[in-house]
Image 1 (cartoon, helix red, strand yellow):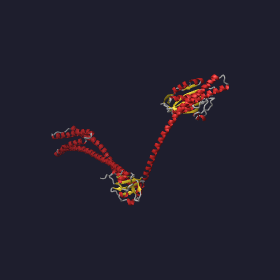
Image 2 (spheres, one colour; image 1 turned 30 degrees about the vertical axis):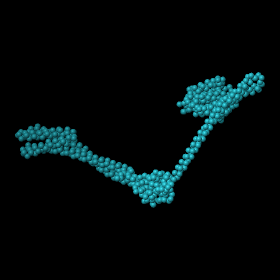
Image 3 (cartoon, helix red, strand yellow; image 1 turned 180 degrees about the horizontal axis):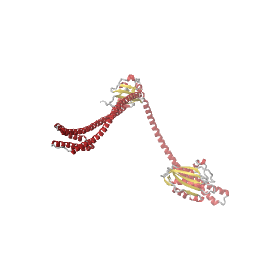
Image 4 (cartoon, one colour; image 1 turned 90 degrees about the vertical axis):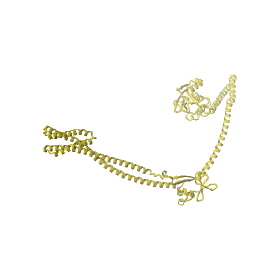
Length: 586
């Protein structure tokens, strides 16, 4: 059995309509019930008033019958008296029953009932006295008159209270009547509004469904995939433009045909027919769609049941696309990937070969460095030794020019030895395996001061260090070499007669530490602050400022190996400031 489901807007509108109508009917029913209860209380109040009046009337009738008997002696008045007297007590009992829900009236009823009983008893006494032949005295008769006035007063209290209740209850009845009329009118208006609302929502929903159907039809006919819809018997009911092109069958012709007559699959290689289910799972690899025009298409096909709103299936929709070009691109991509893998393997082989070549070159470089450090420096030491011995032993027999030349030989050999030493240090710095760890700059500065103690003492330099200095992440040996080169340069590169003054300070800057080394030396012009860090870069001659031109190159290379940087800034009043930036230790 098919499930019946409303469209969402209609369902919501229907539920809301029933809910509002139910509320309105509930309000109306409550109003009718309240009106009925109000009328019952009005009738109840009027009944109380009637019984009070009945009690007074019966008391008056009993008194009138007594007087008639007293004046005429006619026994007929005695019967009327007996009947009226007998009806008074039931009336009082009925009043007690009617006022049981009103304590105030019950309290007012008690003296009224007592007075009535006293009046009835007095009438009976007078009747008995007259029957006995005795005349009632005036005091007794006067007490009867007083009791009658009390009865009327008590009755008026009860009637006043009941009239007030009657007025209140009558007002509630009138108010309930107005509310009931308003509820009837509101319910009718709500019902009319809900009918109109349901009609509007249903009309709009129907129009929306028609528009959605039109859009769906236009979408199916305009998408880039082929679409074919069938009924439960497999009869084609819809074909879009792409399906017409791929099958070679127009929609007017295809509608009404069996699906296997429109979609005909065969094996690419053998031409044997292929079942539709097999073609769905093939994804265009083996099976191809045979077009009515004679062409073949590799297609990707999917199918799904047509089940509106989750009900039972009413048919099937098939979506398929031409993947001939995609499969060709996939095959080309696979071929490219294969060639790329071969190229990567060849590249890896070449990288291994080059790595071996580099390892061999490094070994040769280390051998060369060993040769420089030992074999090349040994002749230099011999030259220095012979020149020094010549100066010491043969100085008196040498001419002044000979001594000058010999001293120059010694100085050149010393400079050459220092140059080789610095080159070896730069080479080791570039190739050495570094272990970066936490380094205290305060301890590094103490080591530098100890190593340069003689140079600092000879120059009379003043060194100001702003303590404490932070810790950095680096290599202690390289840091000592870097800072020693900068302090040594600060002592060396000053004008003649100027006492070197060097300031060292450091500060944390985010994740880095900036170390500043300031001097009062000759300074470096802005145009030379970059290339001065190159190897053998000198701004002055050996005669004025001795050196090899490698010190600042060692500074830059050492900081780069520790993930740091260095730059030169001008100092107010002359001199330079070297700013070293290094990673903070923590």
